[in-house]
Length: 417
Image 1 (cartoon, helix red, strand yellow):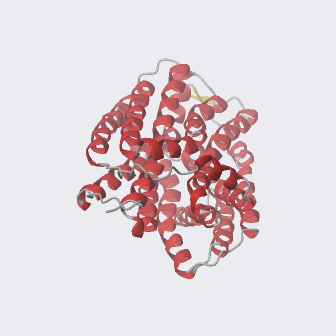
Image 2 (spheres, rainbow, N blue to C red):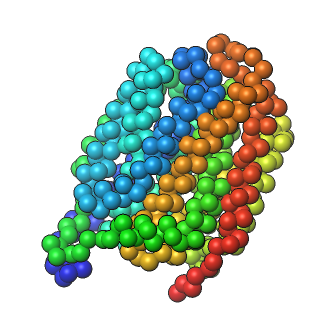
Image 3 (cartoon, rainbow, N blue to C red):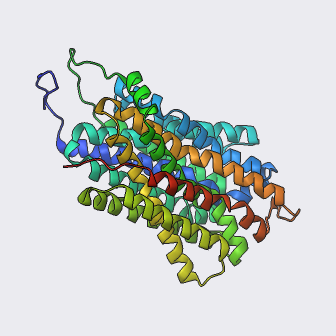
């Protein structure tokens, strides 16, 4: 291994480097579990803290507020301090947040816990991409896609299995178990992740100049809008409100509804690497983005309008909606291709901020709309919303998807070898 200035460096063993990437990607899986887990604790948290949908939506969305707002600073910190130190500290912060959340006696302490969780998890995906870019540049797309797939697996684990655990041992003990896993992960990150040693004369990357360039590029904004449109319905429906909706619409138990909602993430996990591979192979972005956006729009619309359709058909629609939404991975490719190399990190940070920020906006907004239509029904101390109230509140989801389709139409293709 040698630096750009020609200084020879000895690389750590490849197995250790691969283990570092794997544990950084597992950190993203862990982050995704915590991202979607509030969806299977809705009634428990409403009952525990005596709150309605809007407040609960904000409690879940605190994660997204913090996560989205510090993506660019996280990139700067990784460039300055390295992925090993930052990922280890971030995982420790995340674990502490889960402990605080599990031990919360008031809604204010629960907010503190979710804040710390979002703060720590904000490093997860960027760390995995950073390790892949430094040590496995020739396989960056493959490892990035696999990291995304592991994140989606976390979304699945955060639904049915997490919901089953909540049913069996309660939401507090379930979170304590997750915190123990986070402590183990923190140690593994420290032991396996390695940073590249920079030569003393290697020039620093002009990040602020890159940020200015990326923000002034129209294609960056179009890619961001597309990413928001595709991710918003996944995070709002699959990440929080889909479970209580399916319970009400189909008279399901919580684990059954969580398992059904997780089908979206299954489609997303399969679709992301497949779409990325096909897009790279054919050298096309826009056509996949438009097609995926239309599929996502149709899928979420059918789920909202016809939730009582036969179960196999509903499962298929949810899976296809996930596949369509998975085209959001192309928003990162578009941003990278339409900006110079020295502005890539800034561009990717902007996209990731908007993508995750879609959950921060939509989760509480839908909760607010649900509260507006609430008819006063409560079960065991938790608010229960009528099916028509859910359907009205969810109309915003296909609108977001359509906005993404419109943005994709105006994205320019670039020549690729």
